[in-house]
Picture 1 (tube, one colour):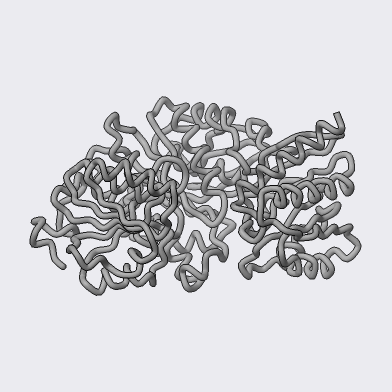
Picture 2 (cartoon, rainbow, N blue to C red):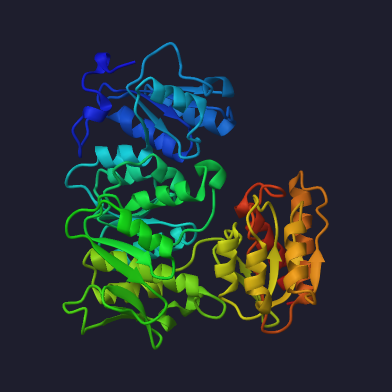
Length: 502
């Protein structure tokens, strides 16, 4: 299956500004990125077939739109098991959700057909004078950091947008007809796995802890995919001084001449670092004499609105990462400050839902693994913790050991609460713990009732000055449709509680 019918093979086509006209493209996966790839390549003369295993009303509706424009869409599991046999392909562009060992993708590679992700295709298709990419990845904090960066860039007067694993697909942002100045690009390990040439102007790996190991195969492979974001960096590779893995990934990266390693820390920064001094966020990297000078970017007070007791350490580190990328791009100090002051956390990310009788109720349902939950718990002093769900085999014990001293009580969700009950018994044996009966969560009413019970239990455990924190340290799929539904049901139950106590 070669490119005889469509001229120059995909991998040999000149880029940036790659011309996809005539390419026979198979798009695997019809989610947000798959739809965007099909749309953008079809508009530029490619012949596109999309396959997806989910024959849902939503996918059928999207298919009708593209089929009018000449894209063929085949829905149903039978279309995803192997390469279609009724045509040839020059390129496969796959959804980040498709695992590397998926038979169709393996078959394509064995046939010599390049398999790219949306990010690789976007990088190649973007014009040579297209927007700069500022890349962000990490196990936790990506979305917060990338949306903080978006706020800073926009307050600098730049046309900028957060895209990638959040918001707009990168291929749409990169090929936007009006043209962005800068893209704040959030990239997951899945996206990076299929990306050879991210080519970011500057990039950061916020942190690396075990996650998605079933997909990547090992912790080493997961970290290696994260580290791909540094490949080809032009100006700054930003890393966390407290996370030696991020430093190692910088040291191993193949970057352009002149690219610098820039550290971020919650402590006092050294030369070529950003950190915190006397309640100020300070830059000793992007100043004329970094050995003798420092620039004040903002204060912790500028971030105080981002947590019930001020911004937690993880939020401050995300802000420093965003500030480092922005400063590497040439953004002035004042824009960093203004962007931080204006920034608001997104839904379900340490979101303050209500204050009831001097108790803060916070929705951090996005904390779906122990590392994220630990960062969230560290932002409060006295916590009634709502936790539990599908841990996917993650280590809960070390998390509970680290946060036990902050807990006033715990309310446990999940079909299997054993990892949490056993860890709490070991490390906080006197802590009041309420295990919510898993019940029947097969319908919306059952899921709502489950969360109502959890909120009522937390209310009974909370005292003035406490934070009731939904930071489950586990996935939601055992009892809820997704993490967002879990957070929305929590907020609804808290709102009802506020009304009853008003």
